[in-house]
Length: 423
Ligand SMILES: [Zn+2]
Image (tube, rainbow, N blue to C red):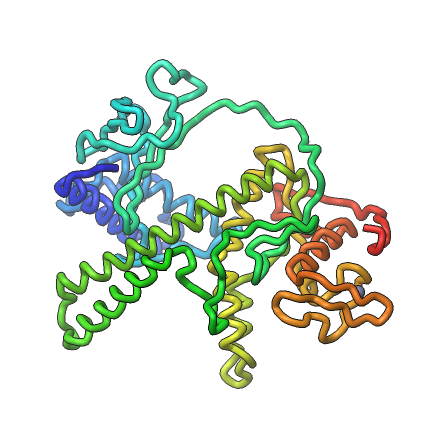
């Protein structure tokens, strides 16, 4: 959105009020005896708070109701076992956002090929970049319409995301082939049919450590380094307990903007890649990776510290950075949209086992990139990530697919498959 400085300040104020509302609500809810907790009581408390606390009233009433709704949903997700219990939102860590739950308040109008105008409650009429086809004006009807929006702020400014209700025909079953995917260390996504998806940005620096800033260009990396040095220099003058200077804040903001740009490039690549895969393949099989636990296990415990922590956590960092979890989420909904399905198989051993003979022989993984089977009668060699992807697909074909969470259970029966060598 193109906001004036005054409008930005208003939106910031609303987001801070929404966060404060969440924190008040959480405090109130957790202090209250269990039998007194109810939606009606929470609703009354919110109305009272907006009357009593002046600065909470900058948040429009509808947005305050949306906070309550989100808070309740957070508890429901917790009770269903999907997430941990809701917590307080910290000022700097929490994403700044404001809900606009009603579509009719927005009054969207297209003013240019690339620009539209929208009404934001208590902010006014603002311009936004028209990046997607939206059902407004003559295109809007009962089945296709905008039902609300959400404002989100990142280091590059405020954005608006519209919630659209639309009719879509159910996809027919996807006739495409089965595919196993490995979240590789050298290739971001290695496919079992020998294809791979690469973003052309080396994940490692010449010294072998993971490159955290691979999505930035050479010039941007130089700029980032300069900004980081400047921030460190300015920080060195700050005495304990002193406020962060405006100059230091500006440098921090510049660093955050560069990082946000890198993050967008990564998300864009992820979207394009997952769409391509979901279009091409009917059955997609991935490993069930538990990334936080992998990082924890590299560190070990106090009594029994992990070996090669630096290498392992470097490796894990590059796994985290490729954002495997988000790739799986995208593949799940995109596969469903195209009539396909995503399945998960247990991860252990897929990178050590030979995908040709099925044996796990010690020392088979020559390096991060190369797999050479040490089984004398086999001796297959090839790309290590590709080998793992073939193992993932094989596990699925042998009926080892994990059953998804209750409610969406898909039970697969084991099916007779050709011996590994014939694949
Ligand atoms: Zn082998």
